[in-house]
Length: 358
Ligand code: NAI
Image (tube, rainbow, N blue to C red; front, top):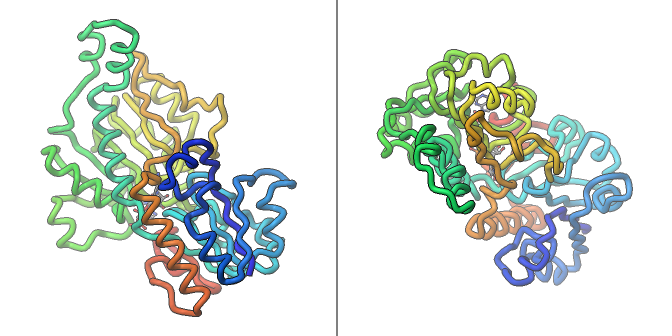
């Protein structure tokens, strides 16, 4: 069996830190195990263009492992070339880089390691909310420059306490964000999701569901995006929706870059409609050097909390998704049933409601 993995280059860091498992160098820690069973295991970061390893090896690979952090885009065209492909495994959470409809039609299963990095992301969301609301980045930059003008940073610094905070998507990550924010004593926690939270879960965090998205955003001081990218969420936060945000709201998106319209977000920040935008996800990845989100600022010179896609790839998370990838492979090799929560697309059908209402 041929297994192809598209991972990111870890370079010197991966040689020095073996716990960087999701890298080309450390190969998810499964090379010896797979090869000892006689399987061929190709690992590469080369994913773009007709001469890439992804294009070359997809032709006869039976298993494809990809990661959202360095997404190997599995387009319909690629799926049509993949005559031997039976299963795509996402080492992590979020399989939008795979054309899921094409996978359904071609009876290719798509699995991910559900839950493996949801706490890692939820912590990052809370951190991003705090750094935006408290105007942390400009304050730190001021210190690095050798300056000290408290009023210049305090003029745009607030408390999280007393704010209305809302999540678009209240699944594993969205719910954990709500749980972690409750002790900050927000004015209210609200959520927008076609799947309502179980009553006991909603009650335990005190979260109210708002069914209309415009109505929802108009109530929030802080919006966090925690839903998967699919046909129903691509460009969801666009110029039209941003008009309905409270003037000066903060927006955090660690879900997927393409859920927020790049130029509309930059324009909203420039016009002070948004006071800040933070996240780690970009459309496409790696983000081009001139991507406007790298450098955009609000008129006071702050409001940008962008980082590379790493919130869900802490060393703790890498250990969990590497182990999870191995157990999905073990089940596949031994014809054992998969954990139901890991199956996004089964043979010929969606097995999850998270990638859109169908
Ligand atoms: P989940 O499946 O537990 O929850 C997703 C929730 O979003 C579900 O409750 C679903 O009903 C809801 N949803 C789907 N479409 C929606 C829509 N149109 N409007 C409102 N809600 C909608 O998924 P989980 O584990 O919470 O992950 C969510 C997403 O976060 C992933 O799909 C992935 O894109 C992203 N993620 C990002 C990471 C990072 O490193 N930045 C790491 C892990 C996940």
